[in-house]
Image (tube, rainbow, N blue to C red):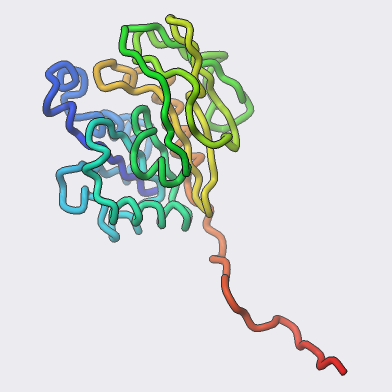
Length: 241
């Protein structure tokens, strides 16, 4: 499987705390996690590369795309967003992480604002497993506990998920739908909430396991491409008197 990890890679250049936690960038940490889990074809792409590192050739060879963005959503070129959306509709898996909820690509595929409440106050987060039979939840206990994270709270303006996998509770009292799956065209989409740039959430074994499971789940199903539009009949149509 060919995996591409996209990260705007801005906080790591501008915020010393983020750079200290993720010295190789969030994309570098995610790549290391997936390589360690056994994936061999893992590449990264960032905002400042030509075409944001997401040329047609790169996307055509990508089975699953991971997306992390935050402060530079508006800098992502609309042509690239359309290119990614087309690949998802044709079968490429998409995993949207944390503040990627406001990315152009996620909002385009959801068709809503994807707005939410938020607060950064070093709060405990407990992600409760809602659907323990789902493959993305494989190997996870009843919940995942993070000592400190940014709070996201309801209402989360997204369409009703195909499957709701995780619901978060935060120390300040809010709850949030933190793990949601969708299908758009032939492509599978997984939104997973944890991952603020100033917290080491992507070093947590259970968070890593969920992302590994998500990549496996989102992989394309290779079946014959469907024919659309005007078609010739499969059988002879008898003339009617």
